[in-house]
Image (cartoon, rainbow, N blue to C red):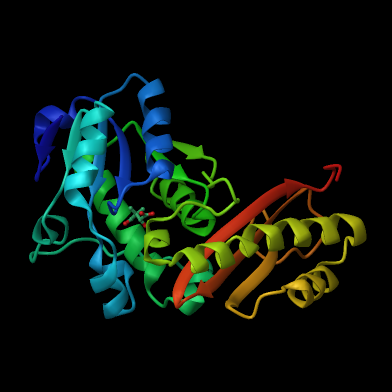
Length: 275
Ligand code: PAF
């Protein structure tokens, strides 16, 4: 594996598959890399803890950093390139394009983390400009991020294939996230209620077809006080908005705090699904 801090023209001609990350790699990232290897394209993993997507300075400062372990993982997986740019390379002082994530970027995750999606789209756009990948791989755990990146690719008419990978969970159903290492064992245990709550909400909704009541019931059933819900919504999967009419596919999105750590998860499903 070649570790690079800048992109040279030789890489551009390769038509690579890019996996953007902020490091602190876990089994979820490994799954993305395994998917990437199937494409038989040169594989570039980027590690850049993007300062402009953090609205909270402490969250940025505390974001887990495990670069030596990350390099070992990527070496073992025989990734072709590890791109670790400096901030000045991504955000040159002579200017770069800032992307506005629009109305949707200010809802759900964006409401609690003002500017977050502008920062995500700006860095992803910079990575696309610099690397010109043929394909890019994202996890479905960050569903709103994925939705907005797909929109960016359409708006900018990028010829980039987006590959979506299903959320990887631990044996208790907790979605893997770099932030999980900040939880105590007890916290991890509490966090498993998130997936249970998603399943509960889906079941209530498929039975009643009543969004508001399903959400109220799910919240009432939440048995632990140690988990603070920020939002829990049932959205139209196609528009990522609150449904205005019956849709065929839905997504339940949740953000919750456990031990002060913000965790997100989601569950998408078809209306026709049997319970
Ligand atoms: O999902 C992430 O890890 C980040 O938001 C991303 C896409 C690498 C941009 O910094």
